[in-house]
Image 1 (tube, one colour):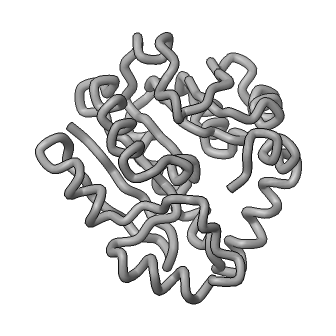
Image 2: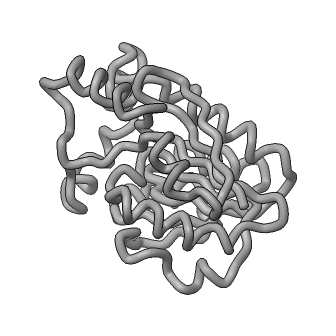
Length: 208
């Protein structure tokens, strides 16, 4: 797993790396475009909405929403990626922050129609994911939803099958979503749905 310096060094080549993996239907980014398209279309159901993007990277998804008049708030821990994203979204509220510490207080003071996160939350352990989602739920506006597009699987067996098929470049330091497990962890707290888009990626939709 890359640290902050690693992501800063990767910033300029990140989009191309993703493209190569996605186009060849390989772990970790197979289904990437479909995942982003799904979240974009969901967020676009409301006009000029407030959006919180967690781990926005170079702003690929957030900038498209920004261009359509949505109000973008976001956190990322790579200063180099933030600079690239700022070039696309000069008026967005973009904060350098490490989500292992939760969210900055100034973002907790707002409500959001959409909270989105793509390929970021796998840096949190399963227990940290649960706590983080619980922190996000009160920030949702009426009818709002959390959209997590990431390396994710329906079952633990599906994850292991992908791991075995991709063993030469599997990242053992990352913690991927298993839908059955996160749904169970959030039972009685939130509603969850899973939309798979490839053998290693999908979108988990979470609501109150």
